[in-house]
Image 1 (spheres, rainbow, N blue to C red):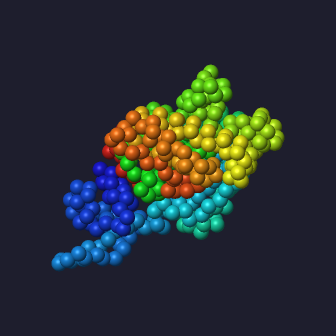
Image 2: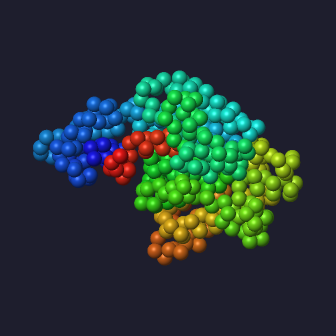
Length: 400
């Protein structure tokens, strides 16, 4: 109970914009002043919080403001995307201390990729200069599906050779740090709740735009993972009944119509892009998609038509989820988002609100991520902070 109360107080301080006094904490969390005082002293001794000056609003003794200590704890975040792998060192308040990015090694050799990730983490920590004893662990955001309990990657469609790869245990052995593995879209949603600001509060869906397209779910400030940790798989939502066939047997699914690989193939078949249609690697898809976006920005009508139509289809998928969960907001982000954000935001908000089942009651806000392009890696690091510091009901269970 004491550990749970500690995380409750720490979370209340984290969520405040300017810090809280002990009196304000007692009012917010409902614990006695003595309990607040005892836990505050414990947090100060652990250097997780600091006393950040005094504040007075009238007669009486000025109140001491408690804030998180940014250097109190750190976490390493890794976002494994089929095209690019991103790394961050995150401090306790969610700021990026150090950043790195590499092209994800190809060849379908998970062991080689894991070894590269481990060596990059070591270099990242050295460059950051942070106290290694204050690194709580490593979080990894990986493409789904995953086995959340086992920490394994289970044959993601855009990572050939990654069938039942024990990513968590292999990376733990390679780095010496505790490791958590979660889906990339879930990690992005976690990042938004921890570091996204106003866009990360309440109930929202996070539309993850990467080599694939997925959806993170947050209801009443709680990230939803589902039974096996694979909530948010929207690849087989049908968005175009006349669209290209999908490997699930339907036509016009998100996976076959909207992801960058599908758009690049469409542009290549139309003669807008040059090169082979099939057998493109993830890095090739990333480069080709960037060229397609640049052509559209430069005024190529055919390229613009492909991207604008994809925005309509993505809006249809987002509308299905937004209506099912009755959320107040749709947040877009991910490594491919920056290239299409202006074009998509000119189309998608009206499309989503036009299809909203609750339109007469509330508007659905559509925004870009408050975290930025590295939302996957930041989210992976936030997984560690969330696991270590956030109040969770499991903390109240007695182990036998």
